[in-house]
Length: 360
Ligand code: NAD
Image (tube, rainbow, N blue to C red; front, side, top):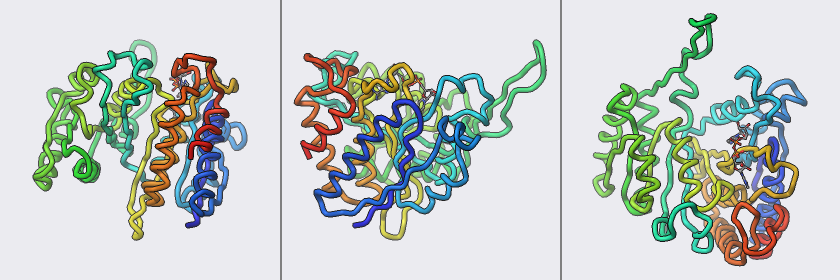
């Protein structure tokens, strides 16, 4: 197979982890006899520096032309006080919207060799295997009106949380389809005791759930969900939620497995006639300015995102499994970065990337 992949390294550790993810992609492709055509593009702070905008038109064109997009992370501290339109993160929201990727899939699973790295007791984490399905194109991050206006005591900031029935239906179907091949349970998270958007959300989820009699559907309020994720994470199989709740809960979920650097994500949209999904693949973490440029970043979340790309955008399940098995083998070997608190000297980002290739 020929794979046309757009690579957007972004900022900070995004560039470091993406380098290793690409190394693994090229390695697994060669091993299984596929051809990878890579194109590099600009997104985030680096794009602002070079073109004045966080998402250049050229990047958007490239993303549409390629089969899949691999992204590092965006964000530079120098833009922390910039207006929203001129922040690197605007590029990220822009490319998700441009590609129409409306479902963010974030698998959270425990790794035996990392149980001691989790802030929770071993017995609580051992066996966690869930996937967070986060709606990615709607809700508070995109709703209008938005902005800050007025002055003095009357200066007012506004954001709008809004969802249509169609938006809720398509993400709910995706969650139930995934649950069919897992442990057949969907937990939908909302705030329906307070928010009208959540009341519509719950009503539509129940309607879609009726189409899947073999899958159990339950509802949790988001505050309780945040608590249950710590108290008893093993109860979850597929957790379905809207954009902002998912953003927060998936970071909470990320530490269950030991480090935010471990978590991959897949943002997927339309399904092509071949059955492959349009997809944007990125680790869950940000650009981590505190460790950027030091070869300390854990690349396994980015490498796991390559496995997700192979699975969803290229339907290469065997190749995806080979990458995931190699990640497990490297974790077992203890040759890991400092965030996973190895017993010996921590490995560098590049060493971990090479170790994954060797294990493949
Ligand atoms: P962050 O995820 O960058 O870092 C949080 C903490 O986790 C830091 O201590 C960091 O060192 C550590 N960490 C993160 N990834 C790691 C890895 N792979 N290996 C080892 N340690 C890792 O979140 P933040 O500090 O809140 O944000 C920094 C910048 O990243 C901000 O500009 C933010 O807007 C941006 N951001 C971007 C994305 C994205 O591009 N998808 C996501 C979140 C944050």
